[in-house]
Amino acid sequence: MDWVNQILQRWQDIVIPAAVFLAALIITLWLRRVAYKILEKWAKATQWEGHNILVRATRLPSLLICILIGFLLALAVSTLPQTYKLLTNRILWSLFVLFVAQGVIVLARDLIQLYLKKLGMPPRFISISSNVTVTALLAVSLLEVLDIWGVPTGPLVLFIGIIVLIILLASRDALSGLFDFFQLSSSGKIKAGDYIKLESGEEGYIIESNWRHTQLEALDSSIIIIPNQKLTRSKVINYGRPLKQASEPFRFFTRLHLKELTNLRARNLREFVDILKKAPDSVVYYHTHHFIEEHHYLTPEPPNDFAVWVTDALGNEALGEKLASLDTFEFTNLGALRDRLVGIVEEFLTRDTSSRETAAGREFHFIRSVSIILPLPYLAHDLREFVEVLRNVSLGSLYFHVFESRLRLGRGLNDFSAWIEEDLGEAELADSIAHLDPYNYTLEGLRSSLIQQIEKHIK
Image (tube, rainbow, N blue to C red; front, top):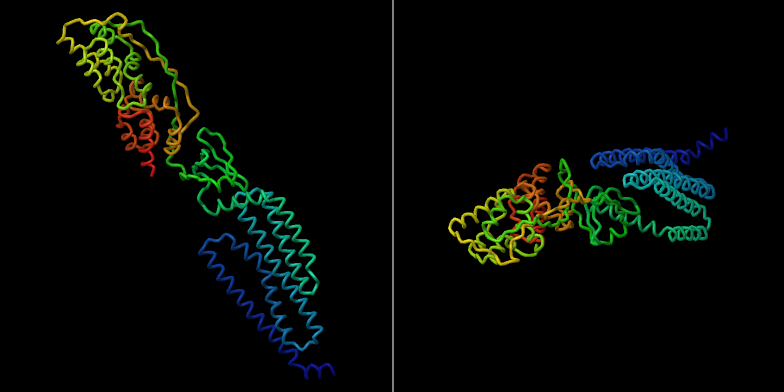
């Protein structure tokens, strides 16, 4: 019964550490519960996706840590010999480090996988990142345990540092690309679906972005690969996400313009008006419009060929001025334009019956316009794409869609206005462009005015 007497005599040495252990355990478990409740409320308020990962990774380690804290505090107030106390303390702190490391490793691994998948990183990179993180945390934990037991860690730290340095040097390009990718992703300035344009000229919609490069789809459907480093170091204009999509895309065309002699010629006004009445539309179109394209840099447009011939060859300045002042924009088809030209000349002939003829070699030769229409590799699905293509197409394409579609093709409406109204449903913008008098601009001036109106509408 000696052991019973010893226990009764030293009951404080047992009861006090036990009481400290129980009190510490109760308090730490209560704090743990409160912390999880606070975390749950915060996660619901912020919609944080990592909440379940955090709880799953820390639930068991946090419970074991609460028990260890109780043992550590109980050991601190116990009367164990110093030798045993030191040994037990090292064991408990080693377990503490391992439990913390277990929770941190699982948490870091799962969070890395979650967020790298959201960023669209390749599976191989995700696996390597997870393994490197786990290895680094295990190495730190091992160093802490060795330090607790008094084992020299200097050589091991040096060895790990050399290995890390070698890895960093070998993967510096990949790390640079990764840094640029995170910089682009975290800034939120560009994202999939945005239309961007670089100062070096590349432009298109972002269709994919990974840790090495960003892929753009140009307006001609070609794929452009831009290194992330170039994106972060270049001036980039972001036009934002696509606008309202057209029911049918606008396809751009251009045409080759040829002229053909008809073997018809006039020496005086009577012959001139008789031939003009029967001339095909392509003849009327050529003699009223070829100046506009050949001398597109002049504004207002030069006079038509009829007015020039009447003034210079026949010397009839009054009639020539009347023909030159004819507003081509008023007419929606070439037939109406021809009738008006014929009417002006016949009205003059009723007042002036003299039959003045030109000198030999100065007859008016009627020329026919022949066009070969060619499709361009450009499609526009919305107004932003339309503007970007319009900046770069040839003046021949602009002329075809604005002038030829109004008169020669008998539409009375340019192709741009028709598409904007019929396929995009933007009646106000279409009407504004339709009422734009193209004959008052140079072709470059007309391009600028169209772009300005559309960009103002987009904003």
